[in-house]
Amino acid sequence: MNRLQRARGFHEDLVALRRDLHRNPELSFQEYRTAAQVAARLEALGYRVRRGVGITGVVGELGTGGGPVVAVRADMDALPIHEEGEHEYRSQVPGVMHACGHDAHVAALVGAARLLAEDFRAGRLPPGTLRLLFQPSEERMDSEGKSGAQRMVEDGAMEGVAAVVGLHVGGHLPSGKVFVKEGPLMAGSDEVKVVVRGKSAHAALPHEGVDSLVLAAQGILAVQQVVSRRISPMEHGVVTFGVVRGGVAPNVLAGEVTLSGTVRYFKGEVRERLHRGVREAFEGLRAQGAQVTVEFSQGNPPVVNHPAVTALGREAALRLVGPEGVWEAEPMMGAEDFAILARQAPGAFFWVGAALPEPREHHTPRFDLDEEILPLAAALLAEWAAELLARFPETT
Ligand code: NI
Image (cartoon, rainbow, N blue to C red; front, side, top):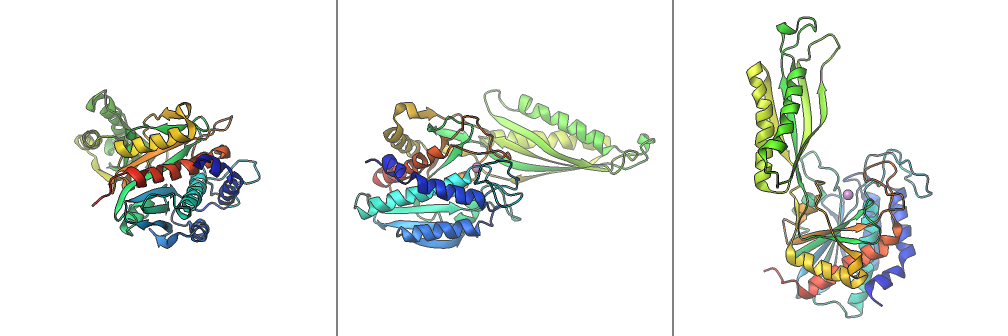
């Protein structure tokens, strides 16, 4: 039996685990219950377990050493969204929901842990060490601007790692297909905060003040030309302002407006051009009497899949689902903090299609996924990890 057939043999257990996590979602850096469940399962399977890695993360290790360390990552956190689904496993926590499928990621990696532990005991694993990373807080950065991946790196989770892999389920992608791509897959993202300070006045005497709201609007429109006119048409970039706050009353000229937004890119050079363009679009408002500050905070770098790690993953996927089951992934402007792990060691990230007959969007109150893919996701992670142990060069 191959790993997929074996994983299908415990499909019900994977579904039960995913539903239990779905009923009991936990927000970023609060994944205590999830982490405890994972740690207990890993210990039962014979893994050496470290708890509290990166605040609420769990690391499980298996293997004999004497070969590469291969890391496999699953993120564990839920979102501050109130679930609207009617199914019996809907969230029991008001205002918190697994609306991105991280419950499925945890179940899949626990499934992979089981497959790999069986292989290890049967003497079928190549020499080396498997390191399973159950990561907190993919969705959110803490007050110091660090997400779960960064916190785990700081706690040594990536030390000595030769290669790192992970996957995301896609509620919008055809179920049971594995989406693979070498090179740029997901965008880097930074946040930008802009403050436009004018001068308040009576709304009927606009010439007595400096209308920060009108100026902010000009800035927002000017920014629309950054992507269209500052970067090559062959490159990819996004600038979106999602929050505008300002003003106190309908009859008062707004003295101050605060804007926050996101900048997305794949290449460092594009990123610099976007930053400069945003800065100039707003700083130009100073000529009209406003005080302006523009501040960027660094988010996730882009996910750029390593060629050799991707190739071994593609082979693993082909063995499990054949050529008709392996599709070329489209790069997207969404961001993923897996990129932080993949900066520490060669890494690659795949998508596994999990659309229901009526596909659901991630991060929405009715998100759900096709649980039939859980054995595939588990088998893919295990197969890929075993392949890397056998064939990926050891780091020195
Ligand atoms: Ni996600």
